[in-house]
Length: 180
Ligand code: AR6
Image 1 (cartoon, rainbow, N blue to C red):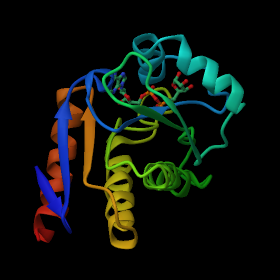
Image 2: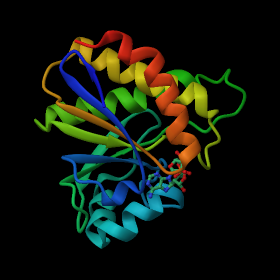
Image 3: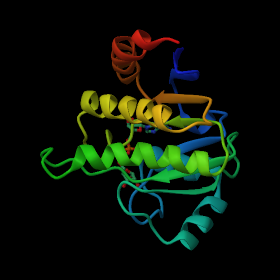
């Protein structure tokens, strides 16, 4: 567990659909109509109500975020965001990934929610290099905490041991230097 300016930041190895949090984040695509990876897992675990709400929302541009119920999952809401497809790093990918994290946090705060769990957005099918993606995720969270009040806990839920260890390494090198 890490603490940055009063906000608890933690890393967990596991399945985000099992996490209990005000909101879990889905790494979706522009249609919001489901897919593979974490998106498929969330729709399967949450049930058809999520897809119904997503259809009504009608899609989401890359870097933005939208909110639905979490259906049958233990969390209250799903924040669907769309990370960039990684090409060569020169197509604005880093800014788009940063915005996906930051806008998810903004939506959380708009709904007066306090706790959120993120998967490692864009690092599966969308092929974003994992180390850089982790640095961006951590920076977006820290910037948000610097600028806005209200959130209490941010959890990064990593699906593999390697991803967990990568996040641990990077958080040890950044946040723990900033303990309150
Ligand atoms: N819990 C936590 N993390 C998970 C889970 C899970 N249940 N399942 C997979 N991951 P990806 P993307 C990890 O491919 O790269 C979908 O088809 C996975 O190991 O899910 O943003 C969408 O519809 C990886 O580290 O998302 C889009 O079309 C991370 O989640 C596209 O994939 C993200 O991998 C989005 O691609």
